[in-house]
Image (cartoon, rainbow, N blue to C red; front, side, top):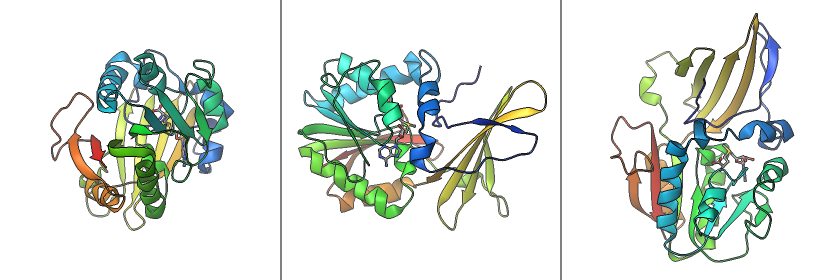
Length: 266
Ligand SMILES: C[S@@+](CC[C@H](N)C(=O)[O-])C[C@H]1O[C@@H](n2cnc3c(N)ncnc32)[C@H](O)[C@@H]1O
């Protein structure tokens, strides 16, 4: 079984042999088919051991107030967080992802505004805004990522928190002359990240092997961010770093950590 715990899922299509897939833009990526396939109840990013600690931590950080999820998707986190009694709203670019969310929670339970998390305003006052599963990297320029921090800030009450879950770019794994890192190699699945260190871009390729000579290929393009740059973006928007851990359970963040959960306070 393939369990992707640190990479988003991507649209895939079957290609012959060495064929490749054109990279597609965000709105096209998160289409009806991808949305239908996104949820994997009980496994991968939906496994209780992955989701449980995230929901516990977010519920505690909301501190009795309301939460807003940027890029809420199909409600992987929002639905169980709302079930814990935290009022949750969302912003989401893809109507198809929201359509899937609506099979689990109606507009009254989890209101969602369709739009760009860097700019869209959602009615309400929040003690917590959160953006998980590496999704700040879906904004492909530094300017958009800074705007996203500013957008989080304007939704928060004074002292409110913005939580970002993000992978640490694997630049230390790149020896001179090499630009790709195999981030996962399981039976039937290989994941490769290709870095463009000049443009600060990352293309993730997912190869899933079936029977015979075909592989299913999915690719996504991101702007990777080092934690220090993230902290500076936060500062520009009026935040300071309150805590940084290697996971949702509070493991120490070290030089070897592959991702982080950073909590910024307004
Ligand atoms: C990896 S999924 C994460 C969904 C959900 N937060 C979760 O943890 O399962 C990324 C989501 O980001 C959304 N997205 C990408 N760019 C966006 C943007 N600029 N504004 C709002 N949503 C965006 C996609 O449509 C998709 O639903």
